[in-house]
Length: 474
Image 1: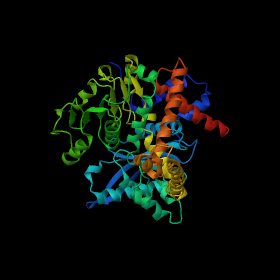
Image 2 (image 1 turned 30 degrees about the vertical axis):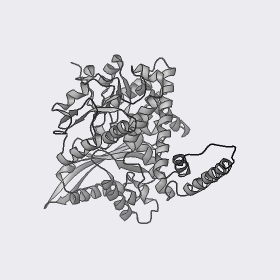
Image 3 (image 1 turned 180 degrees about the vertical axis):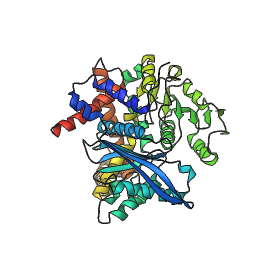
Image 4 (image 1 turned 45 degrees about the vertical axis):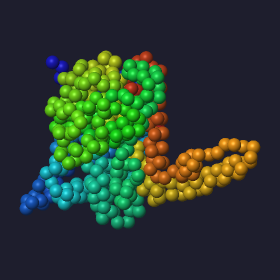
């Protein structure tokens, strides 16, 4: 029996596969590969009448650009190898979408469900304190964001803790991203990773050559989609591709099983059901399947693993029937399964690209915090005024009896509306996802020795990181 590589080993294997196709010196290859540093902290918090000790990590993979960027996850499975592998992926991810950051990642070994909100705040603030005093949270050096088990709430606690410790730092709000709007956040950040998955699929479906490789045709409309994990990323991805692109989400897999409906599931109703009951069981108008993992092997056009790493591995890869897999989670396909799926002809849109929407919009939030002004505030009304001038002139021409055309009111309303922050964020995200995909597919289609999009993504990213190190004189 073939031994399944760990998540860390999978990242290294995929890195090695790409580096073999590059002309890097051994020293530069080693510099790009290694994790620069990992800080491990064990701190105590007095809770429920006694001291509880927690273990946390902050790993910095590459400082070819600063600050370094990467989420903080709260989960019982957090350990050093996982954090370092995720930090490496962040380096490559930022390089691919051309966000000017190095890669980092953090984690705290904790089950958030075991503690109430006040206790979680005490724990989070103490963890933040330990990182802040070592500049492992800092607007110009290390900028965390939400990850599994964390969200806006935790980011608001962290930024407040940073402000308490750095009372004269005018850029304090930029020390983390993914904050609530009233704490310096940005419109569209919560949905960003799921929205990025949608934009990635839209871009893939613009190219007939790429669709043919996955034995698909046409548009996203009516494509059968299976989503594994209906957390923040899975929910938004499923919602957008079904409501806006017309795809049919025929199955959703959660921790307690899966629900299936060949005609498509109502994602908003399912999300409400999960929030009320804690799982998908007993959801109306759908068949419940207790063995959720088996639903990964159902026939479908597109599979979206959006939860944990390693859910598609050597035990089930040969039974996967999806034509196209888009990795909304980090590392959902092991390197062993990746090989099996590649030989089957399954096209995989890799995680370092597919879930880069979060860090892209985090970049926009960081820029907003440093500029101290929301996007659109300076130009929105000026845009509307210029558009009004054009419409007024067209209307004047329309008064000429020899001209019979008229502009519809719907067009006028849309044309006159200047872009607000949310529209600008979505526009910037769409542009970033398109440009990144085009850089990958150009390598994918121009080189016979590049078999898949993942290898292409690593090639593009590693070359950009290496170029940055070369410019520093290394």
